[in-house]
Length: 315
Image (cartoon, rainbow, N blue to C red; front, side, top):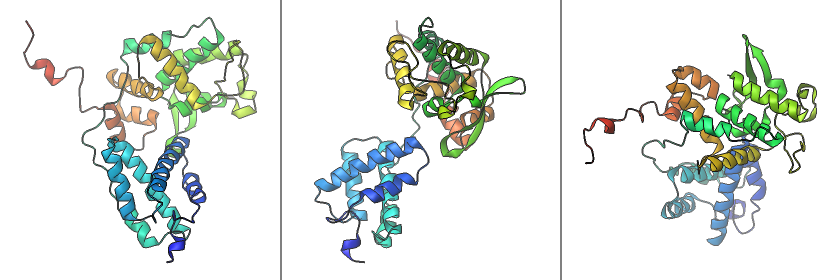
């Protein structure tokens, strides 16, 4: 194969191939992550004089990332994006399939152990839920967002996309039905009565209680609120949901708390409350029980930990 067909040489335009990589992904979060990963790689690649893409080039980039001290998960994400870039390039005749195959064999970085993540205790979760000022429209909306995240274990993107049509009763209780999550997996999420009450209060105060009839954005539950305290628009972004969590987490002194940590908090509190792991898995929408067990860290008890029985103390 001629070098003129090798992707990322001095004459190649890689943007169409990058778009093919992104178009092959279903998750918006994955698209953003891969786009950032490929942008970083292409910037480094240009600094190196844009050599033809090969296994050696990718290995050199991997070594650079490790020297920079990036976390194994970050390195592995970037390598996954590059592997997919190589496969798409080969499928479109811009990279020798043999070279692409070599790139797919560049191994990721081994990660020892499992990150415990971040979560709140029951008392901390309650404090966060009580933080918004329910006397204002924005406060009612923000309290409803926190209630859905803490009460239903949704991802921030799922919370932002939540529609009134999805709030239905099943077996005598309110649920979020036919929720399409990561990997296009469909699930039904039980909703605690207090979370539904928070949503109802926000919806009535905002004048969108008839959201089921709203044809814009499938009747989104959560909408932007302007500085004047009025509903502005027909929805809000997942970043907007993340900003809500960050605002009240800072007010409560929970610095570094992210929206996804409320999903983990839901799982931890449910597990400590006696919920079955298989039911937690179904609500979270995990593909396997092993994923849920790793997510919960059920093998490690931080409440009755081994260090509690050492028998040592300070005078």
